[in-house]
Picture (tube, one colour):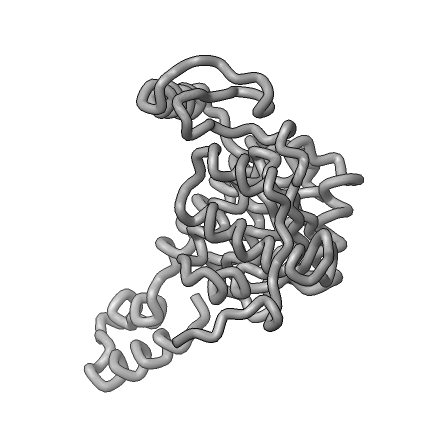
Length: 272
């Protein structure tokens, strides 16, 4: 039998918070994340705590990407705050000011603003409205802003401190008009190449774009498409060694089977 005693430790959460959380409509994963956030903040008498995605995955048993997605939604609803600093894990805190939460109530009412501004409507109607809004936004091409730190963490793990500082610099001081999206584009291109040092590879990509004067996402994508097309053309038009050294074009004597085999072996070892 489990020995559950307050003497072994407990987490102090305000009754008002518990009552309000019971009224709002969240996903099961979001509720589990809130329990872990309370446990490692209020449970240790602190307002925030560093929690990586791996830590939250072990604490909740949820999927890595699902955690990332639900944290973002909780943050968008002002239920939690996330701070990502260079060289430090993500710091998460709970927003106890429930008047600032942007949520749906689970008691037959909903709100498109803070909890205090409720309007009548059934849960089913609310869900349909939310789906329609989401579809409408997708049609209008609206997307949630990308987060470079999370994008890098998804593919390569925690960014090194120097790269994390670079993220901040590019976002705050570069001429990029859509810095977060452009940085994430560089991260995704690095993922395709799987370089040994992804941080250096990403910095080189972005510096190349800056030198080319590419400061919008559309300009970057257009440049990348042209670059990829040119690279593909070069690869497809490189003659094989057997064709380059085919003596039949010169002295009407084709290569022997042994010579062809040797050239094909050498060709397999070439870097292109």
